[in-house]
Length: 377
Ligand code: SF4
Image 1: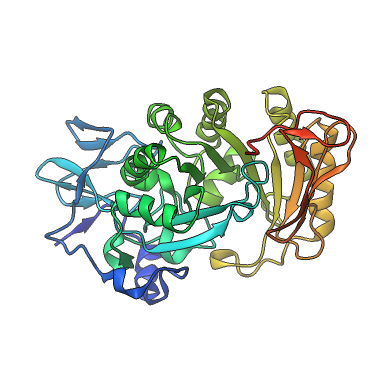
Image 2: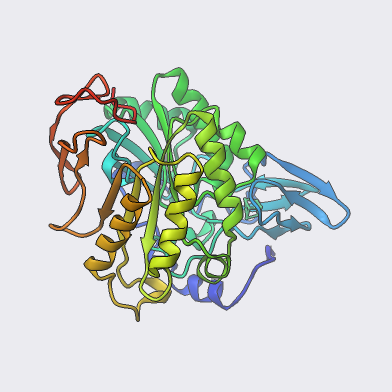
């Protein structure tokens, strides 16, 4: 019998909803395998960054630093201790596979208009009340319908489908770290880029190792208040800020998403404090996306974010000196165009995820020649 260290009413509720899991699929059903792990088979791959302690085996990948005894399952739902060793149950068994435009991550300054072969396994190290993908993030790999996709197969499929990148996304790549890392190594060899869409809740050493094989990332900066972070996601703000600095210094292309949730993260003074911190800490050229919240999961009772609030956030960010500010999730009313930070000409015009025109040549504005931060070719 598998014991779950973090069993609680929420997880019990999840179990009842698992039939809805893994919504996004694009692969032939022939590669789907059901419930690849049973209790006996759990532990496909020895986990990285583990340490033996008197209290049990500690995972050092994220700040949760789970300490697990024999048979216990981690907070992220996909690690288990077997024979005194920690194993990941999320390796080669994604529950979501799709081909997305890069703009969907969102990444607006990284290979615009290119395709990203996007994968996720079950599991996440946070428990966000507003999770859009909770049916896969808040469950275990043995509870989802999974594809059989070893790292080499992921790379092969990406190449075959003309995807310039592999995106680790939808749930939380940090919690399927080993799969991300091994796939990324092979992708690099094949000339395919690696894109991490993450909550940034990761310890410095694993992150530095990951940065050696990653090319671009979009990090969710969920709030700029510690108590909101804890209540909203079960995580802490400081480790995310540290992760942003590590990404900044590593040469991995970085963009940031801030979801503006009514009554949670919509206070102008909090947004101003966040933008000021970004401005003062070397992120002026880092694109920031203020994203509109829609009622979902445990915050179903809230209204969608008023569009004016997103516009206010964008103005605050620009006022603090951030050069590339976007609003998203507002069909027909987005600030989605990339403008020159010098002459303000529209350089990339977007409609939804579609590129209408791109006037960046050789990484520079066609009109005034200013260098535009990003990875363009
Ligand atoms: S990655 Fe998972 S197992 Fe490791 S510390 Fe974080 S929540 Fe715990």
